[in-house]
Image 1 (spheres, rainbow, N blue to C red):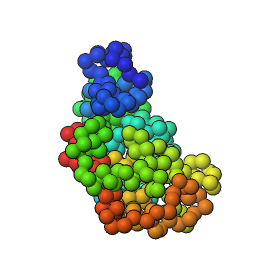
Image 2 (cartoon, rainbow, N blue to C red):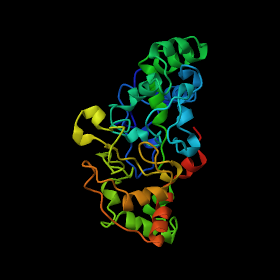
Image 3 (cartoon, rainbow, N blue to C red):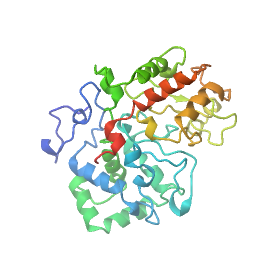
Amino acid sequence: MLGSNACYEGTTQAEMIFPYSLVPEDITPFEVPADNPLTLAKVDLGRRLFNEPSISLDSTISCASCHKKDLAFADTLSITPGIHGLTGDRNPPSLLNAAYLQSINKDGGVAKLDIQALVPIEDENEMGISIVKLIDRLQADPDYSRQFTAAYGTDVNGYNIPRALASYVRTLISFDSPYDAYTNGDISALSQSAIKGKALFFSDRLNCASCHSGNLLTNQSFQNNGLYNNYSDLGRALITLDSADVGKFRVPSLRNVALTAPYMHDGSLNSLQEVLDHYQHNLSGHTNQSPQLRSFELDDDEVQDMMAFLESLTGSQAKRGLNQ
């Protein structure tokens, strides 16, 4: 973890961005790799790359195409198309608070944020460009060449492209919701309906918090939530090659969840109402279904209370779009 006196060769104290300056005092700062400390130059470079369509083979798709800042860096489409209108299998997740992820992608197949961007860049259904071709393309742009030198002291290379993107993503922090204000003592921050929904959410009856826990409202485990009897996307099993992991995906954070419809790994549920209906009435009973899931029934008032609570998890910056 970076400390207040941390300094790195070639980087002045004034250029550093420390995790504790990005998160509220009551939230534990995220860890930053010692070999990729946050600096303004890296974040500026990463922001530019994030919004750069030339990062895709036909120069039509940027990271921002799938992760829209006014939608908590998610999208309204079940599957956002990549180059040539091609589509993959998974719904784009919110990138807010991705700095805290212990493993990356919905199946946990990427070990750290600093290499994650290589997956969509080279995926034939997303950006579809080889890292070698991308390096040549960016190096031919004098502005990019200058920015990489300023940020990393090197020419454009495949090592620093994803690390610059990771540096930008680490600044996308959201802990400023009405729920946070209420938790910190502002009892007027939540409506009575949201307060009732909060009690339901954390109750043994619904057991939501067994998976959606902590400041991120996720324990980051991999669970099968009974969405299907037969999964076309095997989820975690694609990584572990273990049949016991079929249909398991990383439990998503519920922060800003009201902005990130549609839901589930494949975007197959269109609203929070459908999500609540799924957990009440539509569990598949798959052999790997999480034992944490409990049968429950909500009346109409309780459904509205749950909706009010889930909506209270929307941060004010996420709602208006982060000024990043």
